[in-house]
Length: 406
Length: 80
Image (cartoon, rainbow over all chains, first blue to last red):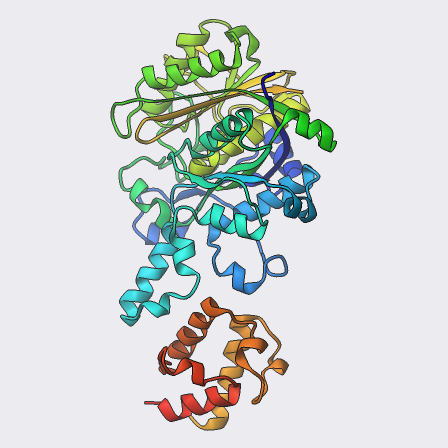
């Protein structure tokens, strides 16, 4: 009998809110988390636009000697994981007595590295970097910290797949549980939001320069889109084996039915259509589903010209004129990068559980390719029981998850 | 700096960095215990003293500095 993988808890720390309830409301109301940050202009950025993410205060939650190992992204991940564990009815006693795994998406630690290097250059003495620096500077900083803080003793690994990191973390987690390696895994994605982390990304002119109207800048699929807006924070999704969850009396929210993935084998930043198409196709095959089974597509679409076009083609190539509703929540959040794959599962879950589809913010005019899709422009009351979520990243890494309501 | 100035500044910066009340910092108190230091956070103590006083405690001499009194004396005698 095949093991099934379910979601039993979620948590979020996002520019739309620092808990599920606030984020749900923000999604529903079409709130934007995007601001203009003048500091970036002083630093020489082409675009000073960014999502605004609150810094958590971990004093009182985490002792100083453990807090020094945590840069921004680990702190966000700690907060989203606290919420997820609470919602999943998992206390520290449970974690102490049961093996629970950890798979989080993260693909940078720029701020920590910059701070260490600055100290080295200033003092010519590496001890001045401080005890926390090395732990903050490694890509695996999020899982390192969370595993120690929550005393998790299962798989302990960071998944780095650019903007597909968070999605791959959940997908790989579902495989480990399905194949009997774990009964429960804390999955998620985290993303630092400081200027150092995306300065060089701004440098390749990838960002929108609609600085006179920050909340209108991120406009996935819209004809007049001119680039992405960087964002971040963290999202946590607790995955659990179905029977295990039933036995535990856990809240069973949804099932991970399909995980498709692929590589483009093509350009490092420009996606093709074949790669993402295969990711979508494999997810459907893995889930044993057809296009009619999907009630909503949460697209990757980041508000770049080429990226949104290629994804629109890929979606249309598979779903044709089926009319499945499509949106990208990045209109509201900006591109949450390593966090996005996980946060967009959370956003889609909130919509599914609350019977609405948040309007694709700033979708005012379609282009030739997005016109063929059923892009929901304004928030609509809608019931769907299965959604598909795409995340695509630099280097041509693609991930698609299919989630069913339970 | 005078000994008194050193004591006042040491107490203040250590209390802030290690998030303890200044009242736990007394001359005879053992630094590791009062500040709840482990082997890693000792690195931060050394870095902080270097940054604030320009005095670098070597790895060889660190074990000899057990109490805050030891630390005040060390800083005073190693000032530039």
